[in-house]
Image (cartoon, helix red, strand yellow):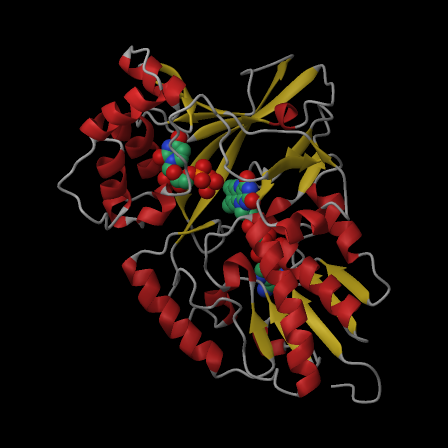
Length: 391
Ligand code: FAD
Ligand code: UDP
């Protein structure tokens, strides 16, 4: 530890969590910050790069649409890049036809062959819901209570089985609550106040966040807990179980893989098409030129997305959070609380299903809280921002 100069902080992970925190510390304190990432690029799972063959900006770890209702987060991200206008309007391809998602008045009228107005549709859907379910305890009950079996089986059962590799009744109801159900013709996938895609991609945005004289970035460097670098405080945004060498077992994650295709012109006419049919092995196809409608490209690149269980060498994507995972999480949190001089934050280190705006908002707030605690000398014990949220 260097006691002769300003404090030195080390951050593991150059995704949004690590980058936003690094910038917050650099702006709030007289300090030096080193950010390291084992990958050869910035941006974590939000990394974007231009496809060499088509010139299209590709979201390398799956499609990322920025959306938020947090004014402080929107103000923050727009400091570091321009957002192109993009509204996610997903279509679901099913054996009964192609429908608009999230479920809205158009979906309902098309699916049931009706011409309902909003009040009629709402009353009709209420008759389909399972009234015997008072308080939904899981994903399936949430769907059956509010949508009924036919919509559930067409749009959610097969997709969710493929996506999560388990029965929907094993999953939390909160996963389904991510999607709105609307009784008007609004087919925007999100309810958020602001939505868009950074014109130069997410990686360029993260590069700007990290462009500060107090911040040093080291890519292609893997952090090993047993060879912890000398620093005044460590911030870890990697997987929580990996920090402890998986000694209590592995937290459950789904990973995804992509099968690339290339075509002339327009392949599917939309950024995202979802496939709820269990007979189709992939969950969705994303065609990335549609995420940047302000650009023109003669050729197009698209990806079929497959979901599977995470093996030891696979990148963890979606935290499953089944009952056994919660037990393991409690054990890892207990171990973490015995550590000194380390904080755990971000999607992987807190084992939560977090969108980019939540990750950014939390890193911003945490940077401020940490700076105050460090100056008071009370930042030695491990800190999890919002540790118990959703736990
Ligand atoms: P990450 O981006 O995962 O970054 C963690 C970094 O830590 C990684 O770069 C990793 O290499 C590094 N690291 C880990 N361990 C080590 C180690 N030991 N040594 C060195 N480096 C290490 N959010 C949205 O808002 N909109 C979307 O449309 C959206 N789509 C998504 C689609 C998919 C398929 C997935 C999986 C997520 C999506 N998200 C979306 C969520 C978004 O990806 C996350 O909120 C965000 O990436 C979390 O940032 P993070 O910095 O916490 O984690
Ligand atoms: N989902 C589904 N069918 C769809 C889209 C989503 O069953 O066509 C379910 C699925 O379980 C998914 C959850 O709803 O995990 C939340 O959807 P969202 O689009 O938010 O998932 P993301 O890929 O962004 O995590």
